[in-house]
Image (cartoon, rainbow, N blue to C red; front, side):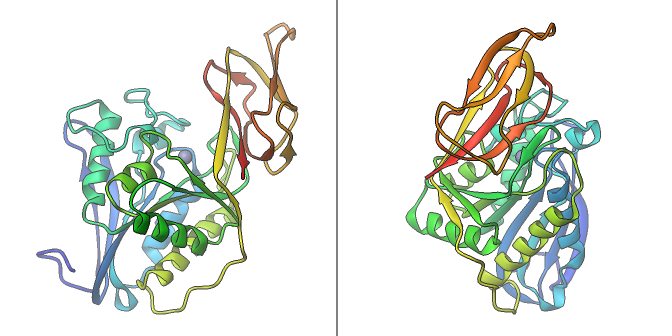
Length: 310
Ligand SMILES: [Zn+2]
């Protein structure tokens, strides 16, 4: 249903102000010629995940209101302070990870207020695709996560969206507290979090993975007239197990994203600044390594790697 005061079949560009901050979230609001559901597409919740940001901008430019049913709200940059600071994981305004702040708090810190604004926009929507990838110092193979929480119908729709996205690795996982797709599931909105791209690079193939994934989900949900492409059957994981650093150190990986490991295999080591060994870091589970930290400098609690397991 078209919003009051907005004629159908048009694109509206603007910026959502986040109350209590200086932050402006640039958006494109695409109203289709025909009434239908609303989908929220967000890029750049993490400011260094460039292919997702570029894909959100590309989709906003490419969507033709004349052939769209329903409405697509695109947040081009969901975390502008992190993007302009070239800062991974965190928002420089408060040092928080925006993707641990959902559903947010309109009276909280900057990230909490930004999260609350995004959820306010989400409340106009029936679906959410939140584009991510490996951050500036993360090596990553693509995968799509959706929550195993929430009502069955919401979970089933999220799984159908995740499969249609076309990345051949799916993670149906207990939600990370404060994460976008977890908050959405609790609010009854089917959501997926596709990850493609890595290492602070604007990789054209990863960008296209996101663009084609979004367009195919829009076909699946009836926003676009074409039939969805049937992607190949994915590898499905039910657990994404992270290993975080127990201490500060210089990190050397022995495994890479996309490789298989056994539980307890040495995945890397932390050394001190003189080169003496602090600890060998074991793989937390048997499975496929989905991302590794590429940075030499590792602080306590930084993620070192994550393994996808059945
Ligand atoms: Zn991310």
